[in-house]
Structures are given as C-alpha cells and as structure tokens.
Length: 243
Image 1: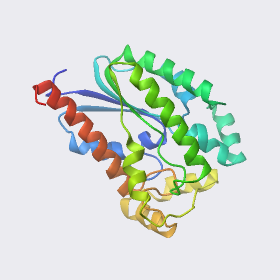
Image 2: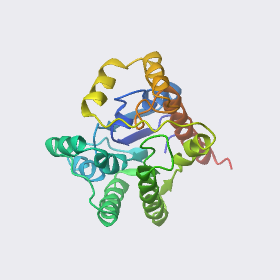
Image 3: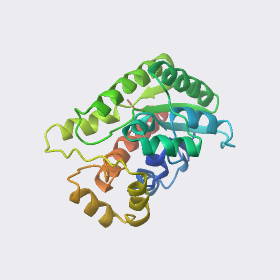
C-alpha cells in the first residue's frame, strides 16, 4: 500500500450510494482528498443482489481497502408487502434465511479478497431507532454472522458500527417511526437532499440519526464517516509502522 494515495472501495446499498438522506461517502471524500475513493453502492441491494452485481462490475485494479456494508435490505424488505413487490420488480432477491445469508456473504468475501488487499465489514445498522424492535433484533443476528465470517479471514476486519449508534440511542427517547411506503422513500430521496431538509424531516419524525428509520440524516452520516475515517487512519499508521 502507498499511504500517499490509497484506493478505497465502498460496497453496499443506498446507504453507501448516498440516496436517500445524507451521504457518509461524500463526507469521507472531503476528509480524504489525497486518496481515491470509489463508490460501488446501489440502492436496494441485498446480500444476493450485491453478490451478483459484483460479478458484472469492472472493478478498479489494485484496491487497497474496501468497506463492505450490506444486509439491511434483507430484513427491511419484510416490513411491508410493498417492499417485497419492489424487490421482485427490481430483480433484487433477498436471503430467505440465516443459512442463505451466511453462504452469500461468505462467497462475497472470497470474491472480494481476490481484488482488495484489506476489507472492513460493517453490520447492517438500523431499521427504526427503537433498538428493541423485532427488526433490529434480526439485524443483531445478521451482525453476529458477519462478525463470525470476518474472524475467519486474516485480511478481513469487523467494524462494530452498530454499537456506536446503539450506545447513544439507549439513552435517548426514540421514535418507533419506520417508513413502510416505497413512495415515501422516493419522495424523501427527491425532496430531502440538503442537510437542512434531512434534519427537518428527521426532527419531524422524532429521529436522531436517520431520516426514516434506515437512511442516514446528517448526524448519522457524520457518525458513520467518523468511524470509517478512523479505520482508514489506523491502516495509514500501520503502513508507517506506528503502534
């Protein structure tokens, strides 16, 4: 790795693509201008659809670092029949059970390890800011699967991004709001594009880090960016030989 100009890939769904809500990727790009950041995010991706899409992407050669953030849509799709229909129409199948999720995620890691020197894995974050709801309990299970798979590979590092959020949400009054309308998500993407508008929308719904229970507002995007930035800096310190 050349610390003067790392090539860093970001792979995931709409949270990585930066649509809807605020973009953690754009914040990172501003903070890491000396490095090449490549966004491979696509809205709606599941662990299966991302795996299939990876085989169609002409990925940049010589990628130093990668951040893999996928899995929330494999659970979010179950919150409403509208999302089930939208996934089928878009050709984005989701994992039907934990075994299938584990198999596709592991295959994804093996595919990426042939193309990226070091991979950071991130657990699916939130579905609603009530951390005790059934959807977030399911995300906890997927997070444990991702952690276990990551521990198997020496060049893969699990980043407990959820803990950074859950520890703060535990002390706050949280809203049960979760958007269950495809049209509402589309409207948020179209009309809540500025930090001011995302904050206003989140505040109206009683949300702290998201605009709709899933997609990030500015505070959420900054928190994600801070965690990922520290991971990049940790690799730079390693290149320098610092502890």
